[in-house]
View 1: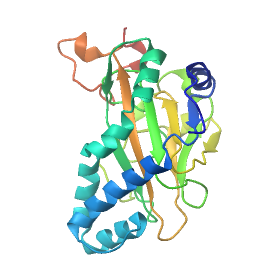
View 2: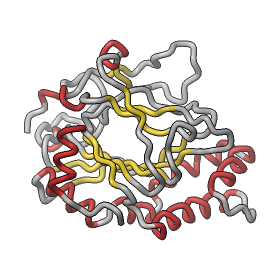
View 3: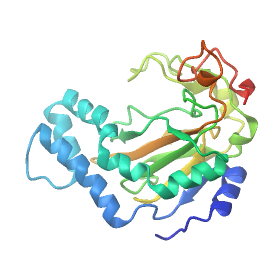
Length: 262
């Protein structure tokens, strides 16, 4: 592992930049195991000898896009992936960072962006969690760069608390994959410099939930960007445990995130 678990260094980077790139977070063995379990799951839909995860993804998409979607939906519950996401070193860091003995899994997930770029997210912060403030984990299974696409962050946006989010699609008339498309108004976004992160396969980005981020386009035909993610929620600022009428997840709208009491 290239980067060691230097808690003080990572914490300082988070406070300064809102994110920290952990080089070679996963070993080559870990990365292979994650890819293999996703490949086996795709192969269960339609068996074949294809051993390349990206090529297999497109074959299943062509075979049955609905079942491809089912693969996407069930993958976050894969125990092999959950074991990698919840490795003890990461859990211990989150507890140290938030000064708590108790944390909650907010939303383990995989994100899949192929060359259609139809599911890219506009600039947003990580809301709709148990706690107001969380640490987000994001790790690509393939290199992310200007050719393959990746994650963009907005410089210093984490220093201004939480912005109001909108739910309607920001570009009317464009087909959307969801009716509730959470994003921040462009007038706010334009205040910040957009930075395209280039993260190698198996490395990880750990970032604050208040950091504004988005996706940027995959320009390589036949390529698919697959990342695994998690949101770590500390036992702090959880309205559900303070207010009998609160929902378990803090709503996207109708609540001022910046005024949630401890």
